[in-house]
Length: 100
Image (cartoon, rainbow, N blue to C red):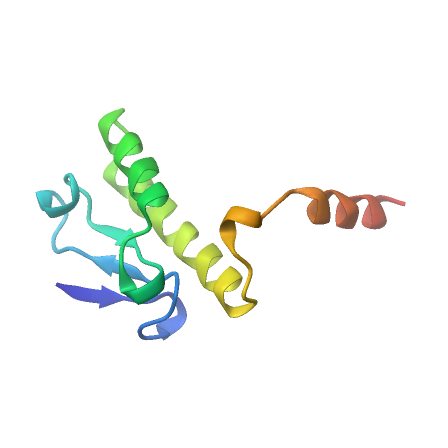
């Protein structure tokens, strides 16, 4: 198993683990998964990506989702923000500030 890291950061929270070639069923037929603390898969992300795969999303779409989530989790990890505490209020406030 090789590890792919967005922006080349090795071992970072929110890294994307590549499970092998497309179609490898080591992660429900997916290419990779997003990892968190201790480089373990994040269960809620696993569930979401598995759902996307099970409902017939393109493997490339699921891979794109995984990369986007890996980038989000790296961003949150670098700022020590627990993703479970993430809310949309700061985004709405920033949007309101830009709009006025």
